Length: 416
Image (cartoon, rainbow, N blue to C red; front, side, top):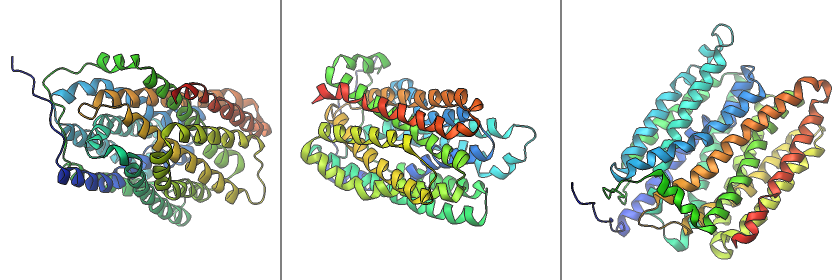
């Protein structure tokens, strides 16, 4: 039996710089592809097919619940190049998206076959994305300087937010001229995903191929660290409560209030504009004042914003008001996300980051995957008998979620 390979040295500065450039460029394409097939647009597409709230919640959960696939994938990191895992899983996700390029053909399927076919495609895309994310953050960990983590992720995330704004501006114009034509939009997302393949194939990496087997229980054993446990409790709870709320704000606007697809797209553009406006400033703030302080402020803000929907009313200016709400929740979620990543990276050893980063992703992802399904099932149980009172059901639902989101402050109090 061959001896384990020694721990790889840090990447030289030119390689780190090249990795940062490729990561920023590829993430613009990759995360646009990811979100086109996992959030917002799939919700509208499923509503157009007549899917129930439970199925909408199920689809919203895929990209988080399938993060659990990272635990078995972690075993391959000791023997297989992280770049190879990323490229192969991304190719799987791109191929799985192909049926949605023919969305108009799905709509003509007999009976109710269109919904399960679309769900299966969304699920396989999410599975490929989640497997790839097993190694994405470990790859990035080799490129960043400890004192500039917040700024790097501010730039990285600002880039793909700009890409998504461009995509959704195009989507708004396209759907206004071609109502219900989601096929073209999924086709653009497919092309962006295919283009990303050529960039990630060139990423440098700091190898973790030691020859020693990486077991899932080794990652789970890291939970002995009290700070890591409190980090997971805080971020998993707050993240899952927000993700349980946002898809159903869209469903409420579309089904109960009567927003058109293009009006919903306006709110989506506002959501990503909030990220563009705030991500880089949040990065500098997190580097300066620390992650815990930012997590505290953004958790309180998100809880209050979600709870504020208990007073929602379809007034004359409802479209700009809801665009402002989506912008604000995005600003707070962006700060929360930068602080979350900063804190997790500070708890991660740079020479072997995969175990800690996968544990963090799985812990947060499983919670975020369960929450939308539970929320959808709850709404499915409440809404059939609501009739004209459906809006009151949604108001009570958001008041409940806003209160629950604030409970994330409990473990956060001891994290500092």
